[in-house]
Image (cartoon, rainbow, N blue to C red; front, side):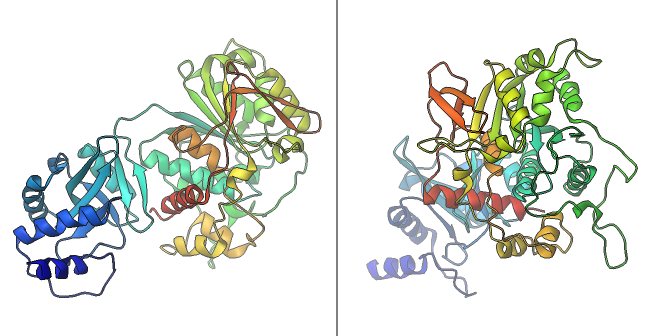
Length: 455
C-alpha cells in the first residue's frame, strides 16, 4: 500500500504536465492522497481528481456545501461532491482556527474574475484564488457602500490609466461606485480620454469634470493625449465617445460641488492622483445652485477620506512632484482642508518597485487588438521609468488598510518649497503608506495585472 500511495503522491506534485490517461484511483485511495497533500502543502493546494495534478492556472472557488470539512472523516463527502460537480478538490489552512480545510472547488478561466466572484458570493466564500499568480481576491459578498471620486492629471503618466481601470474593475466586482471623475490637467483632450475609457469599460454615465484654471503647461512624460482620437486604418474612430469634438465638460470644482451635494454625509472617498487644483478651488468656493454650504463646509460634511498620491516622508526632506507643480493651489488645499477629514498619502517610493513593463502590458492585453491602454503602449514610448504609483491610492481607497502598512496618525504641513512635513499626533488626520517588501510588491503588481486581463 505504501508503494501505491507514494506513486500517487508523486503524481500529485505541482507540475503542469501533459495530457494523460485518467488514473484509476478508488475513492478510498483518494482520501489517503488528499489527506497527505494537506501535510505536504501547509499553505494550501488545488488538485484535479481527473489527472491527479495541481492545475497551473485559473481562478479557484470553493463550494459552500463542503466548506466545513476539516478532518479525514469528512473527505469522502468532499470527494463525492467533487465527482458530482467539477472533480476539483482544494485544501487550505486557517491559522486563526488552527484547522486545515478541504473543499470541493470550481475553477474559472483567469479572465473570468467577475463570474468567479459572483460564484464566490453565491457560495459564501470570502476569496477567489488565482492559481497562476498565487494571490487571493476578496469576493466582498458583504458589500460596502464605497463612493469614489477620482481626481486625476490624465494625459501624461500611464499609471492614471491603470488607476481608472482598477476602479472600473472594482465596480465590476461590486466593490465600489465611481460617482465621478475630475480631470485636473487642463485641456479637453485629457477629459476625452476619460470619456473614451468610460465607454470602453461599459460605464458611459460616469460624469466628468475638467479643470480650466489650473497648472499652466505642466510636464508631459508620455504624450497619450490623442488617445481618444485614435483611428483605424479605415479612418474610423477606434474608441467611442459620448462627448463629441464640440462638446464640453463641467468645471472640475463645480462637478465636485454637484456630486458632493447629492451624497449622504461622510460617505465620499476621494482618490487624488494628480494635482490638487480642483480640490483647492472646491475648498475656496462659495454657495451655489448645488449647495448653500461653502466649499470647506461641503467637504467637511460629505467627505470621509482623501487618498492622495504624493508626499515625501521619513528621513528625506524634499519637494513632492504633484504638490510642487501646483504649489499655490497645494498650499491653499493643505491650509483649508478640514481637520475632520482623514487623508492618507501614498508616497512615490511605495509604487517605485512596481514596474509593469511595456512588453508585459501588451502581452497581458493580447486578448484584443482594440484597447485604449494597449494602444498607448503600442504606439508611444512608455519605457520612461513609468511605475504603478497612482493605483496605490485607488487600491487603498477601496481595499481599506489591511493591504497597506500605514504610519501612525499625525498632521502634515506643506512648505512653499513643496515639502511635506509630518508631525506625529494620535489626534491627527493624516497617515502615509510605508513601502512594502518584495513579496508585497509582487502581490500588488500581480493584482493589477489580473485586473488588466479581464474582459
